[in-house]
Image 1: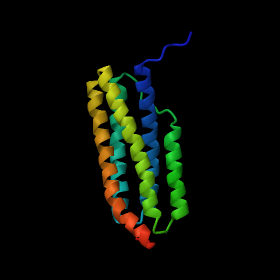
Image 2: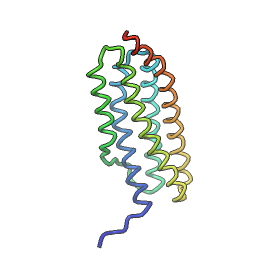
Image 3: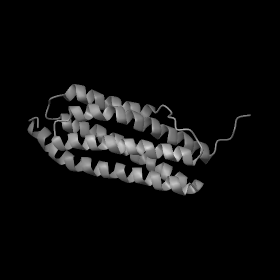
Image 4: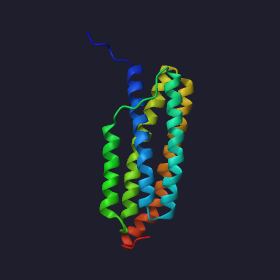
Length: 167
């Protein structure tokens, strides 16, 4: 008879998902930074590399809190989002629209992460993992701030794209 799945199981599976996603994002960010033409966008991607490393460390701490080994579970969603970003890098390289496209791909990543961290935080609260709640909330706040920062940079990048002139 199959084991009945619980919220603990769902929490662990989702934790593995975001752990895998963060590792893939960490690999993609240097390429995005290199492809960015806007200096603020390039700096934002570089800053997010360090943040992502910290988020991975916090996730490893959460795994420890629940008595599990940190390991990822393949996340098709993040792979698709990253592939979309790679296509933008290739298709729009050197154009005025490149940064606007990179921002759109980065925001898709951020929104995915915000959703995952928000869900995990709520489940950690329900499951009584108060230390995990604090760690997950820290990552959630960073991802939300990154999304806001991208919105600000997008104003300039979108204007540049409309003018048709590479920055």
